[in-house]
Image (cartoon, rainbow, N blue to C red; front, top):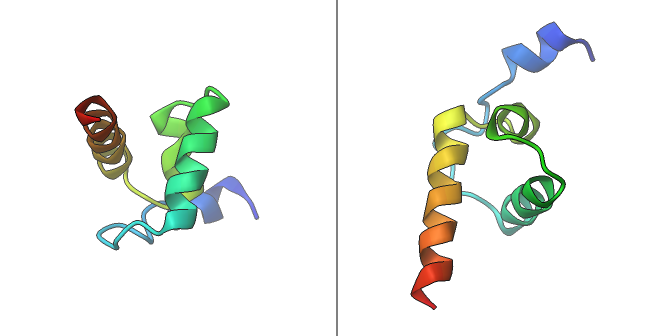
Amino acid sequence: MNQSDINDRTDVNAGREWSDAELFELGNLLMCGLSIEEIAPLLQRSHGEVQDKVVEIGRACKAD
């Protein structure tokens, strides 16, 4: 798969509900130090969607 193929599929999952596996992967990627810009194409989500999910999770953690 080349960069063009990845770019064409960047936000295939946009608008779909996040699965438990995606949330787990998001956490792992963040813990590995990847940026939202790097994570979005890996999860096939838009930058904004990944950023919103990170903020949502952060808020949920603070509420506990």
